[in-house]
Each structure stands twice: as C-alpha cells, then as structure tokens.
Picture 1: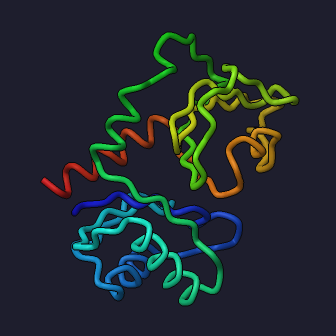
Picture 2: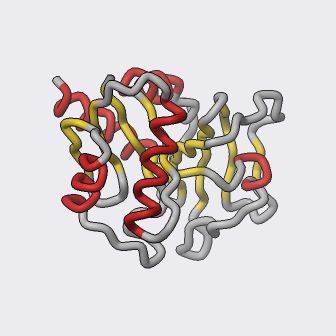
Picture 3: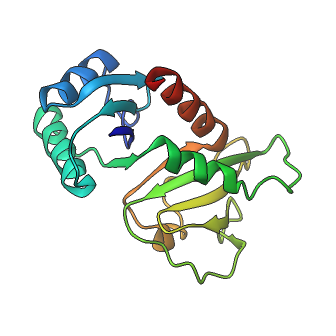
Length: 181
C-alpha cells in the first residue's frame, strides 16, 4: 500500500532534520520507496503492513528512539487526501491577504456535531468544517502574526495534530501522485 505520512514538528521548534536522514530512518524499518516533499515532514512510501495503527506506532517509536523526541505521524492514502481536498469548505468564501486556509489532521476523532463556524476567543482562528480526523480552519493574521500555537480550539481538536496549508496539501497530493505513478 502507498501512504502519505504527515509528520508533526519536523524542522520547526529547534528540531532540525535533513530529509535524506528522514528517508534513511524510515527505510531502516522496512518501508519501501521512501520519498520526501519539502522540508516539513511530508513523506511518501510503500508498505505491506495491513494495520495502519501499528504501522504508525512503529514509525513513531523508531523516530523517537533515533531522534530523541516524539514525532507524531499521521498516515493517509492519496485517495483519502484527495477526498479531503474535494470537500473544500473554503470555496464560497472571499479570501483576503490576512487569511491562511489550513487543514488540521488529528489523532483523536473529532466531534461532528459542532456549531460551525466556530471562532476562537482571540478571533485569530476559525473552525469552518470537520470530518472524523481533519478540521478545516482559517488563520487570521493579526498585527502581522498568525495564531499562537495554543488556542482554545485545541480543546476541540486535541493536542495530537499537524497542520498544513490547504494549498500545500494539494501540492503534497500532486507530488505523491507523481512519484507513485
């Protein structure tokens, strides 16, 4: 099976990791045809593993052992990412220069009965749509700064998340398809 792995905390917050080293680490545990896209922890690979949860845990354990810090891993197929992008709850919104469209991937299942849109108390982040394990959010740039790392929305989304800009997620999918075709 071909996977897209989105890793949290790669090349941010002082955790620097060269992509050739990341590819090596993932190859060490038997993942095949390991490729990376940009420097922020987007990895494509093939695996015969049938249990996605066990595979995720194996990757996380190996990375933490080798790197010395936890690296949450979010595994998807290209088809799953494509389905998320097709939802595009941003399509009918007027987008301005002070907005960043984001897709937040979560470990925990999200509540689907939220009253949306939901704006953070600081009005710097808006939750516009959720699926079981992904949330579509808008970051508002206030005083030249994006929302802080912690937000009251964390209570809804959980601490085990990784975020990609919506347009970057589309580029990740495109790159995955090119390298797996």
